[in-house]
Amino acid sequence: MQPVTIYSSPLCGFCHAAKRLLNSKNVEFDEINVLMQPTKRQEMMSRANGRHTVPQIFVGDIHVGGCDDLYDLERSGKLDPLLAG
Image (cartoon, helix red, strand yellow):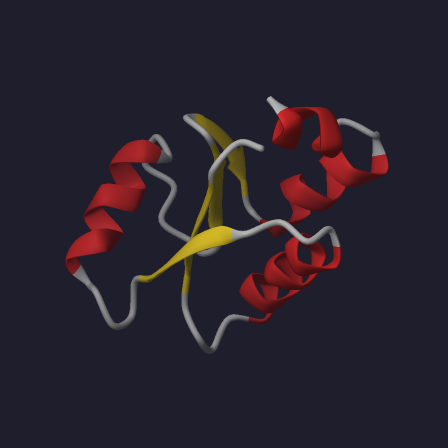
């Protein structure tokens, strides 16, 4: 299973929805709270090609995007193969 990283904020409904999907698939993920670790926001923006909204989700080194992008991958059947590597 590929490592998953999600940059998030505790007040973000889209972050909660993305984590809910990952949890439903029993996917462990490293969560980086950009509200509590503001220096990580710049890291996120660099990795996400300038995108500054949360969540920003990475599977391995692949930038998935945000919550809608994650759900699009799930609906198209592409999320499980991506997670498997």
